[in-house]
Image (cartoon, rainbow, N blue to C red; front, top):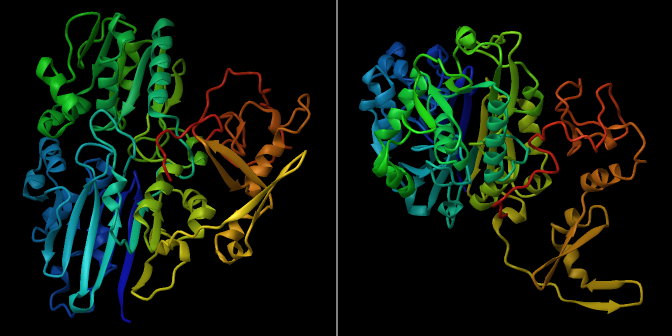
Amino acid sequence: MSSVPVECFPYGVEPQTGVCLGLRLGPYRILLDCGLADISGLLADELQSDAVVEHPSEQQPADFVVCSQAHADHVRGLGALRQSFPKTPIYISLETQQILSHLEADPWASECNPIAWNTPFNLTSDLSLELIPAGQMPGAAVCLLTYTAKAEIGEVYTVAYTGDFYLTHTRFAPALSTASFKDRRIDLLIVKGGYGTLQHLPRKQQESELVQALLQALAAQQSIVIPVPQVGLGQELLMLIRTNAEFARQQVTVWVDETVAQGCDAYGQILASLPASIQNFARQQSLFWQATGQLQIQPLGVMTQLPCILLVHHQTDLGQYAQALGEQVLVLDPIPPQSPQALREHPQDAKGEPMSLPASWQRQTFLLAQACDGPSTTQLIHNSRPRHVAFYHRSPLVVEDLMQIPDLQNRYQLHPLIPGERLKVGLAESASLPQEALAPPLQTYRGELVESGLSVTLSLGANILEDPRWQTFADTGLIEAVWQGHQLVIRGLSQAEILRSSASQHPVDRTCCANCHYYRNQRCWQTDSALYGFKVSPQGTCPVYAPIGDRSGDLEPGSEDFDDEGVDV
């Protein structure tokens, strides 16, 4: 059986340099996003076809470009690409095109090719593109590329690229529906690592904690500065503040800088595509602005009434607001989708340089996630059931963590996407995969229950040993049983879970990581510690140890106190 060559070359995978992945599927070269601030690297043409080109200078870096969303780190280089290679077609969702047409001074976005949702569009006679709503923000798409090598014998191959995606509903975008992947065969899934293996709080709890942090700062007479992207998070925050009853009772002014305000106006261009609840809200009043009553939200003017809340573009020099806001200021930084190790780094400006603040200003972080955590990423993979999975992320540690998840290792062929290194995958029809990835038929194992005075013994037939999943299930020889309704569900306990539970066996009076408030999920979450974000031994200790009873610190994503609402694997 023949195979189709698939290659992927990551030109960029992080916000500073931009996200841009080169894909070669059969004879075609496709760019998946182009957020590069400098597109000169594309001219090296890492995915050149084997065809002889008479005029190399005229060779386009790709046959097609597919844009997944309107965030700058995914579209930053599209204008320059369009200018250099005007004949290269760019495909995009209608909502993303409308947003970018409003934001970009250059009219390149209006020249892109919008395609309808959930409908295969033929790029050529043997290559099609389908966009599925990704849930991360309005217009964001999961991109499905299907190449038909030999239709007469059924050689069809599909590559899925997620971009940023989210499995939880937000105010402006419904969640990515995993049902969209039902009955599809995905050969290669290219997925962004998001927050790696970290686990989010439920969305409502994230919002509740943020609201309380804002109210506490205002009560302490602190103004609040929140750096946000031009579109996405800032609009979510404004709608959260507008619709929260506690803010309606406060004398609060919210200012929005010019860049973020332009993003708000862009949402007005796609009002008909937003959820019905937002459309109904907009029929009664302005979507974002409110100039009367206790709560006022408006574009930035003269900040005479303090304290206030100020939303600014995340690449803004905050020092320019020092005189207007005074000394009592709290900067609330959104936690970006990156590794725990990267969370300890100082915030950076657009050039990647450390961003300084006035000495009296305070800085904290908050989570209002718009990208998936580890359990949701795993859920998407299980629902799409790809033959191969390729992870990309700014941090190699995050990719490594994802590739170490046993449930993924045992089912799929996993690959890291490393910037500057080409990934080659042979998608052969007869390629051998772990049995679980091929959806084996349901096997029932019957047994016998024997009750005694002190225990209950469950005996199963020896044929269960032939199932390849048994070795993982029985790894430690220990099990856990949980009632789900009237059914008793039994699962095996892994080595990692046993290690975590053993931490609680340390004497409570011992000064060690196991008894520290900041030790959760085998990691240190004390920002002042040199161990912050790293996996540490429960027997360890450091100078900033705090006993478990001390709840003065903030919980971090990935802690054991975090829950994953809505995950259904």
